[in-house]
Amino acid sequence: MPLNTTWTTYATPNVTGFYDMLTYGNSVTGNYFGLGLVLSLFMIFFITFRRFGNDVAFTSSSFISFILSVLLRATGLLGDIWVIVFIIMSAVSVFIMARS
Image (tube, rainbow, N blue to C red):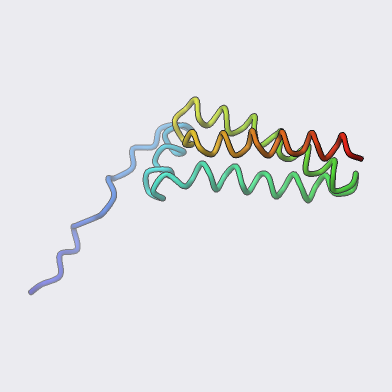
């Protein structure tokens, strides 16, 4: 049986803007692109803010990730459960900051 080299799993991308690129990346990765983006930025901000202490770094990173997750949810690139996770992380960080 000959190999069919014209068959592809994903549709040919028609990327004409930034939103189209994010949507295509999300469809190719099985709706994990938005989550990967938010988690990557959480880690980058956490490492950046570590000079102010771990409590401040976690609070700042979780709040920025929460805002970003709400925006990505509004565009349909992130699921509802992940917005709830970042809300919980922000609430926990408030208690951590109040303790210190």
